[in-house]
Amino acid sequence: MNLPINENGLQASQLIYGCMGLGGGWNRNSIQPEHIKQAHEVVELALEHNINMFDHADIYAFGKAETVFGQVLKEDPALRENMIIQSKLGIRFPNEDKGIPARYDFSKSYILESVDGILSRLNIDYLDVLLLHRPDALMDAREVGEAFHKLKDSGKVHYFGVSNMSAGQIRLLQRYTNEKIVVNQLEMSLDKIGWVETGVHVNQIAARDNVFPEGTLEYCQLENIQLQAWGSLAKGLYTGVDLGNASENVKNTALLVQKFAEEKQVSKEAIVLAWLMKHPASIQPIIGTTNLDRLQACTEAVNVTLSRDEWYSLYVSSRGVSLP
Ligand SMILES: NC(=O)c1ccc[n+]([C@@H]2O[C@H](COP(=O)([O-])OP(=O)(O)OC[C@H]3O[C@@H](n4cnc5c(N)ncnc54)[C@H](OP(=O)(O)O)[C@@H]3O)[C@@H](O)[C@H]2O)c1
Image (cartoon, rainbow, N blue to C red):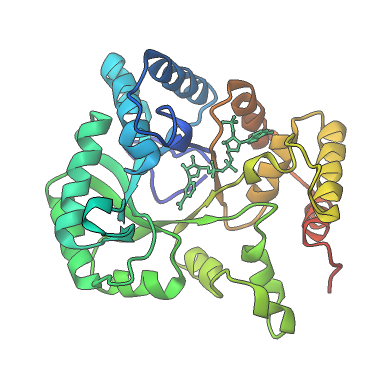
């Protein structure tokens, strides 16, 4: 892959390991040795399968996901040079005592302070890529630009990107920074198909119900902004979770995924991820599993190429309504 985020001579892998599940979960309990062991195991398995990019956010497991990952790097510092590490900031937890709600914050001071926290938890000197997690309604692009420049000059961050942003928002940011926005991370999967629907619905009434920002996929392709897919496994919807209450579309799509997996003698996860990877935008799916068998199953995706007919069969099955 020719990604704009190649670091230290490293080529970013097409699959990214998503670290949200590390650290013992969304609770305030302390980190246990088993959480560090788990982080060691997933990192080792990912690297063994040439997955060298790792996705974090400062909020994951209330900071514990970064902390256990940092512990892995402390115990095995040589791993760092084989990794491309990205993290996100900008979501703030509520402060219930003071009556302050959960909110977004892209102020310069909060960005700078958050990066210091990220580097300290991860036990690293620099982040390969820093993403703004979700759009801040009060975003002052000029202020964000200043923060980016300061982080770049200090060597704390090498590349910058965004998450859950529209083309318009990225263009606004780009206007105030010389740093190229290199990533946009969005929810995209065989279940969340808005990113495809927005293209095929042009000039159709069905476009009404689609929340995926129109033109964003194309803008990212045009500007060489790497698209990353979060939720890429659709939380196991087509690969093993109980479908007792699921819709007919989901059940039919799960059967189709299974059929292709059997025909190609690969895992169902590989089919679901290969569906995303077939798109010419060269999407990087982020895999959020902490289960080693499932992670192993996901790694098979890089060897699968779906035909056009197979890709469309899965897409039409998921949307549940035939084209055109
Ligand atoms: N930018 C953003 O706003 C944003 C938002 C959310 C996530 N992310 C990133 O994207 C990554 C992936 O997102 P995600 O975790 O929401 O989505 P995901 O990769 O679609 O799903 C992973 C989750 O689904 C479970 N799962 C998968 N297959 C399963 C199966 N067959 N049976 C039972 N459970 C199954 C996993 O549990 P096990 O661990 O047990 O396998 C895990 O909890 C995260 O780690 C994070 O790095 C970014």
